[in-house]
Image (tube, rainbow, N blue to C red; front, side):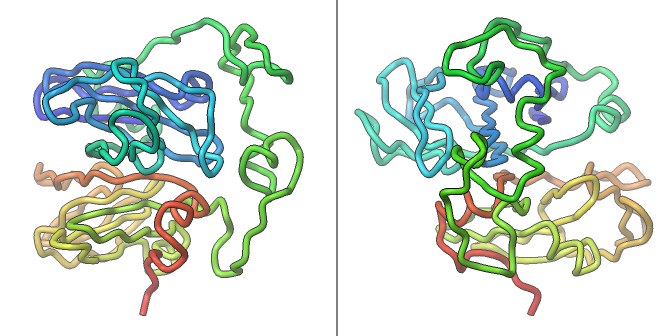
Amino acid sequence: MVFQPDTGSARAYPIRYLHYHEIVNDAPDDGPIAVTWCPLCGSAVVYSRRVDDDMLEFGVSGKLADDDLVMYDRETETEWKQSSGEAIAGELRGESLTVLPAGLLSWERFREHHPDGLVLQPPGGKSEASGSGDDPEPIDYDDGSYRSYFERDGFGLDAHRGGDSREWHRDDLDPKTVVLGLESDGEALGFPLPRVEAAGGVVAATVGETRAVIFSAEGIHAFENPGFEFEHEDGSYFRANGTRWHGARGVSDDGRELTRLPVRRLFAFAWQDDHGDDRFWIDE
């Protein structure tokens, strides 16, 4: 996961580390952030750690809500749902964390675009995800503890353990379809990766007061749309306003850069759990 602060170098947090640690509390020059990842929900979200005038530090509670990671803050012990950023129990119940712009990029693309970027080093230690039981075991970051879960049809904790207790009552999307969720001015809309691909790899949409362009390019990415009409050209490149733009980086051949939007990248079942079954973009 990559976070680009307004000042200072871009920062990368490898998913292979987040599989085991799930939360990184960091403090770029722009302000404190929480880089969060729930493997069961495929949910990658970067939040500000400021709530009102307080700065929070987050940890993993060991609990789940809708098969999603429940975080807690060490200052008040309030519990927070990772995919939504909502406080669900405790002193700050009802508060919501602020989503910050971030994206998932390959290591190759990060190094190409951010040669001076900072990269989280292996934290080490032990994790329950490293073993088959409930006790923490030494971490092997090359193990790929969730690989079989991502490959199988089921979803949620029971599926990770080999079961299939959760049901999925729709056939237009698979439960683990990758979705990019955008929220603005009280409105929410999730963009399923296969639908963006079927639309030619680029979708222009307005959510609340936000004009967005969503690209399927080395994953799925969303930027503010300055009013351009983008058309897919080749590979990860799109053409608009007389030049080529890279869909994953939001950068043009002539040096201009689109503004990345604050979004949540997650599986369809997690977005539906948080927002209902009708908050998915459809090409009409």
